[in-house]
Image (cartoon, helix red, strand yellow):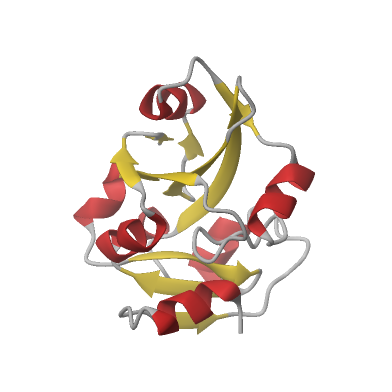
Length: 156
């Protein structure tokens, strides 16, 4: 299927894959996933890539209903500042297309940060590595498989 799903299967991690018919004209892929799958937007998380002032790529996993707080991400990473990563660099580093980047099974192991709001739910949904494909798993499972840290990096 995708590297993300392969990783989950190999790790024997508890998860559930959900799919929907993706509309390329959708203004927000994450909100489209929540709507088409009938999910609470606060439990659907998008995967964004940012770059520090030193060029280090960081993975940020935040609720689709909000946005990424770049200052908070930089602080969590011990960097002076962070900006959104170049889409081409994000695709090369992860092996996924923008709009379908999963925090799981990326080509390069990048430092990953999950918004702490994820911990309040028994499970969350993230991209399974392709537009129209989501995976449901616990935030703790996601953190364990990506060596992620939890931090307040999302903005409502």
